[in-house]
Length: 352
Image 1 (cartoon, rainbow, N blue to C red):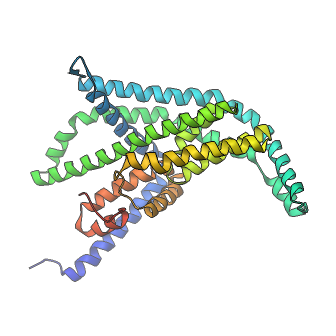
Image 2: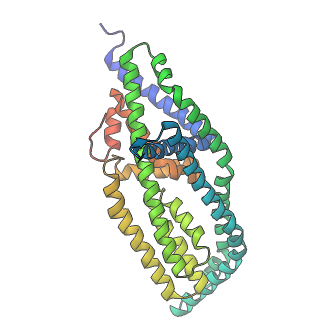
Image 3: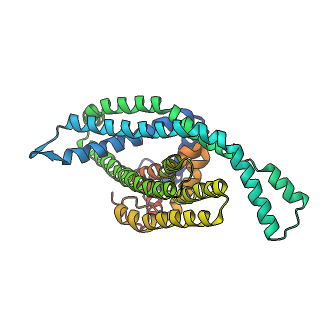
């Protein structure tokens, strides 16, 4: 005979779940300064493991590289990528801030030209809109956000280093955490699934974003757009933001091209080229490489982007997809939350 009436047990479980969700939500909001670098470090740790596995598949003279060497090479690869980001940012951010007032003036001139072309009466309302445009402030905020991310690299690197050290003893901790071997195996399988799907997502997304950024850099450099390497870096980062990231990756450099040259022909040419690159890679190349790795509904991806962006800002937008994948996998492992996992999935099928 059950200790608790089933009619009471389910509402009680859901009440506990909602209370727990409220507590977790409060921790996510008020602990964001601690949790964001930790979440970024966790994703980088997974990416380093993915790169290390790639090196492990290579062989020199028929001999595979030792595991320790593969991890070292993976960390050096990641360090080289961060050095490149740091170098490009430091060389360009100060110059962009100095050039921002000129972009501001050119933007106001373009708006006035459009008003004259369409014979719009320059009412007080239009004057107020023009006077409130603070393009220089927008550029400053964007570059400040990038600088803030760079400022956290030291803390993130420290977290990653300790995760790499803890990785060696993780299996032993799982075995000793549960007396029941079946429970430890279930936990290990869940963690392996999370690791596999997030690693594959990060690996593919990084390669696709690098390819997109390089092609866009070729377009911008050919058009002689100022700070092409910085815009390519931002395009690389924006491509990690689902759906709306590619829109910003096209709009920002295209708008700055117009403000630099004040030439609609160059503007439309650059915009079409950048749009074509994003469309081909985003709609054909990336889906073929990604396959069913995410298994998330497109609507859920938009909701997660809104939610995580709302509580964690720009960092939350970058982390929204991996975090939602982890939540979906965890929910699929428990009977009461399996329906939620089904709703989060793209096709209703659960791998776990």
